[in-house]
Image 1 (cartoon, rainbow, N blue to C red):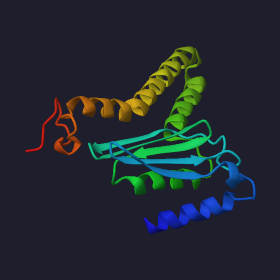
Image 2: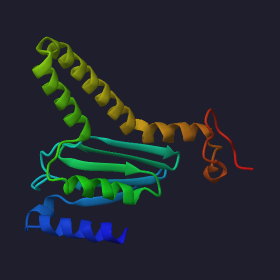
Image 3: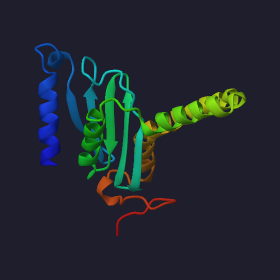
Length: 178
């Protein structure tokens, strides 16, 4: 973690030009579900406009990460112990020298191969790609709304005035602490 923070400080310092830091920056916040939110402004940096393939990883209720780039911001969300993974996602992408994401490069490679080997299949693939993009966008929206959905669900499970009496919900329902 020390190396990640040192690297992030150095990256931030390289962006500071007397103007950028007055409008943009790096924010690390906590979520109340619990977890972390990292927002890094990309406007005016070498990363502005660089493609980023969304990253999702779920290992359990307290171990999950979702990273994306939206509106010229890197946004990373994760469980209470996943801050290093969020920062590592940003670092890997920032040091990737503009290589496209795995998803976009895979789709582009398939499209190039189809154009060479089976040009008649390209329109059907274009339809598939649009469908894939729409599904990916819908999934991204759902993932963005998960913290709000979880908060609402937990509020419904909560005994009035006794937040500490609620344990992490089991799959399929709520369980009060014993």
